[in-house]
Figure 1 (cartoon, rainbow, N blue to C red):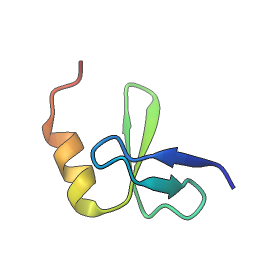
Figure 2 (figure 1 turned 90 degrees about the vertical axis):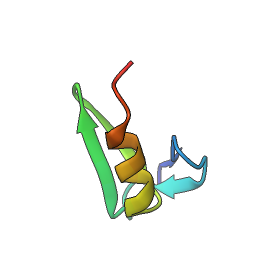
Figure 3 (figure 1 turned 180 degrees about the vertical axis):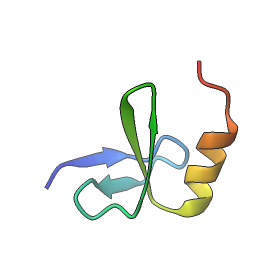
Length: 46
């Protein structure tokens, strides 16, 4: 199973089991929790 790091807390997330993700500018980003996803979405894109 592919694994990635949550960009907010750096926790490892299995992409196939991830419950939380966001799509921005054609890129899917995975998160360990709803709280990390909300923090990410609150940030302005670079």
